[in-house]
Image 1 (cartoon, rainbow, N blue to C red):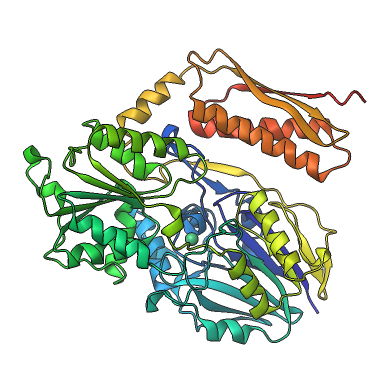
Image 2 (image 1 turned 120 degrees about the vertical axis):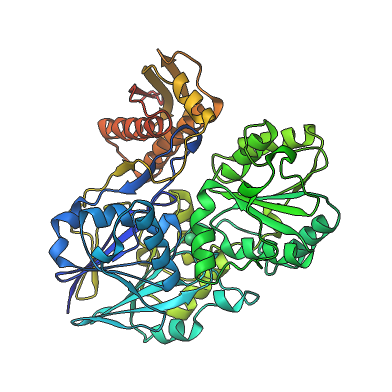
Length: 557
Ligand SMILES: [Zn+2]
């Protein structure tokens, strides 16, 4: 009979910054410690991590930090956390190697920390509580789901997973461990929501391979632009390049970790005779070899941003010329749609051959509704807590769970800091909210700040005020018009992307409040808008203008 608490310090209602706390009586188990990229990171080089105050105050109760996988959204905050609390860290060889790489980059001696490499068969005992793992299929190897077994049932954490029957052995799901977990007493499942909107399921890479192979055969120098966090896909492109006798170069300031850790752990394999380090090449010919395949990789906007640099003579290694073929394998994410379209336009204007590999032929590495239902079926949890994703993603998972036959009261929606308790296995919401906030950090992204960023920062050098106006109807719970933005003292007009972001944020905050509450606190609503907009502006412009939310009820009541 135990008192269990589950809450998030980050990761709910957002993409990234994942950090979930499970407390069993007086023992704290920390699941992941991620960072989030600012929503339009052209204008800032900071990352955002959770507020660790709760863990600092309760350090003596912490049994360990358990890492699911080597993506920044799940482990990008570990170095900052270890600076504050020196707790044991458990993860697979690949994941811990990523943590060590980050420590080395910051010249921190890793031997001062308790970093433990475990595999998916490991059982860790903490008194009555046992922590076990199961391998999940995701875009980086050695990804795990984590189970915390208590006398009142098991808490299962399943971030970033898909079920796939056509996946490399090294990325296979650990079905045995997963099915063994279900002893008829799974108390709750916290599972991701990021892929829940994918409606067209891609089951294999046949079409993708065909497109890439065809491009390789029919082109001279070829440039692939992709996301750096998808090691599995990078390896696939590398393999096809090797088969086509290509020299291969991988570039991008955020690829250093994945390349270095990938190679040292054997998950990224490029034959020596194919590998090419562009830095050592003749700069006068712009590295223009006909049999060269360049893989540029980065986060969020970077796959496109780097192409733009290559078109405008800003890149030291590559200048895009009309005989090039450019293959983009980076379906836009929220906030990068415009830069993606603009880049495609510019590439076409530059006269090169452009192949855009769209989402509908790419296998997703995040669970869709089918995957979620399969997870529910295998585990049969009593309670489901949708995690990881903007609120609308979590909400769709709720619908999926309802479709799967779960009763409304068995699906629990939480926000960061909301505590879900279980007293002797019975859920309870009678706990105070834990303080959460966004902490901005510098230097999470190692490398030089390029000229464009510096120039854009200059344009925002003057602080000003921003007024955000929205008309709402509190009777019918809807937004009537707006939000619209007026700025004062900004010097220049806001970039459309930024004002769109701010409008979206304001819209989401107000919309959510309107949906969720019968009566709402105007002060609180204004504060939420103010907080959201200020944070967004701060992370983009690093300035702190005065934000004035104006919300008008036009329902006539
Ligand atoms: Zn991931």
